[in-house]
Image (cartoon, rainbow, N blue to C red):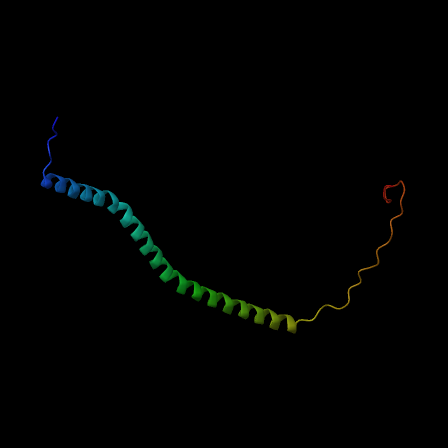
Length: 101
């Protein structure tokens, strides 16, 4: 039994077809990954300096509020001594003004 032999051109053309099919199949996910990396880089390039500016503004605001509160509290005096009273012991036993035993 003899098998027909394929020519070198047909094998080469099938190989080129397989390479082209693989390239068409994989180009979408590869572009998506590269696009995601690029978008993350752009966001990082914009976000990091913006985050530094926000941190400096927050620290400046905290210092300003601290100094303002310190200045206003230093100028005010209290009303004077306040009588709090001494607590008394509640006796045990029955009755409305006594603790249960």
